[in-house]
Image (cartoon, rainbow, N blue to C red; front, side, top):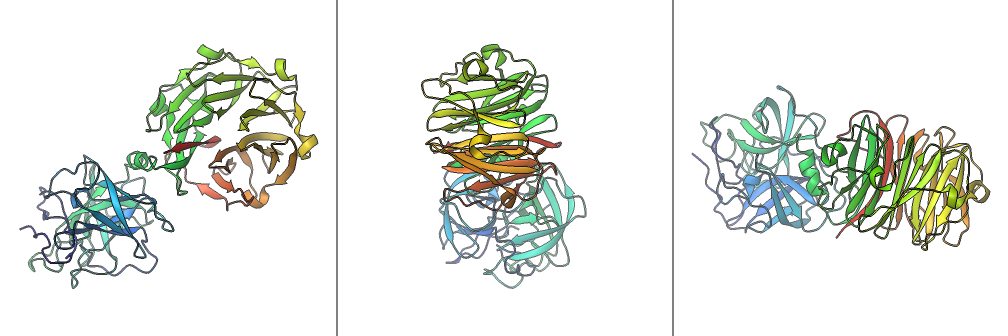
Amino acid sequence: MPFPRPRSTRLTGLLLTGTTVATGLIAVAPAEALTGPEAQAGQHTYAVRLTIGDAANGRACTGSLIDATWVLTAASCFGATPGDAVPAGKPALKTTATLNGGQAVEVTELAPRTDRDLVLARLAAPVTGIAGVKRASAAPAAGAELTAAGFGRTKTEWVPGKLHTGAFTTASADATTLAISGKGTDVLCKGDTGGPLLNSAGELVGVNSRSWQGGCLGTDAAETRTGAVSARVDDLREWIDGYRARVAGWQTETLVQSGSSLYQGIRLPDGSWTGFTDVQSKASNISGIRSATAAGINGDTHVLAISNNGGLFHTIRKEDGTWTGFGNVGDVAGVLGNLTQVSAVSIGNDVHVVAVADGKIFHTMRNGAGEWTIFGNLASAVGPIGTVTAAATAGAGGQLQVTAISGGKAFHTIRNTAGKWSIWGNVAGAANPTGPITAVTMAGTGSDAHIIIATDNGTHQYHAIRKGDGNWETFGDLQGILGTITAKSVAAASVNGELQLAVTAADNKALHTIRHTDRTWNTTSTVDLQGTSGTPGSIAITATWTP
């Protein structure tokens, strides 16, 4: 017989919820906590207590912070009655998330799944100082050791004040659920609905949904079963990250070429990263990608990719996360032979593209109406500099700035707002010489243009600035920022007025750091390349803005 809903003047705890299932698991109204021990201080700080409705007739559930804005929990916590579908949008009842440390934040939006007992709950304001739970990328094997956490009822307490944990093992898994068994007397109780289920690495594999509740306070003494069902989350990276990416603010769109394809991920305003998605699976297959660049315009990301067949293609990731199909740039701007590198930057609503092909450097532009100019050889406008091996672009003060590498040296030019080019200038003469340059990137902040180079086969990295008045700050060694690495590719972007730098290294890691306006640098961190396949090669970043 199902447990009744709480009727006291205060929440009696979350009722584990869900529809009646063939196994006979108890189907109850929304639910409160594990009979296992209290969680140790500092553990599972991402766990939140959810209060749904008022104190007299409300419910309580458990959830997990995914990032600063979203909580993942069970959809059944929000149904009017067990089994009811939960509509997307504002919760029907006022819902409050109480975070580690006691801060309470209202939930303003629900984004439910239709195929399992899951919902993402958006917080009214981002939280700070609490990291989201790390998510697993595979379901646990049968017999795997698991840990569940929740604020629900225990053997002796109706409304425990602290998070409890319990030990479980995987009994079986299907496409959407995990059947789990409590070890010893550990069991999920009322109020643990929506709580995290973690593998031995502390990664989220499921969200707790239904339980027999044997041994929980208030359960019939004859009920001794400790089995439960959780909703799988290991296969929902794209669904979760799709909502995470809709958060307002500055985002760092990131492209990593790896293996034979290109992967897109986002650094969000709170500093966390989404996973990475295969661009060809979204924009159309162009027979593999060996290099790419990106330029952001408002919330859209323009991607230029060089296919394994040597063609240049363009696609747009729209602000809503949808992609246009790849279009062949050669059809509208001219075909380039032996294309080896491409760089792009936005100035206003125009995308400027610089390509290295046949050892020469070419420029084209796509305007806001989607019209392309024909590729022009910069040598005819700027002068020859020998065989070009790499190039980078930046927008600074409304002007296009280009750096080209020839003979291991850097040369710089500017296209002004009237479309006129300056002659090449030798960067070493202004910013000091370095070893032979193998990779280069640029980014504009205000009227200044930052240039980052990798030299001596990538073993050294340097940073310099061309100021808006035309003067240069000399190259500074980045070893104290990046550590001792061998860089394969470098990428820079101006995001909210600050310089962001990303690097792929010879140890197959991707690194990221930020240079603030006060000239200090963040500690360099490693980017989680979850979702990518193969060996990381080139990297590109750009800024987008979501209002």
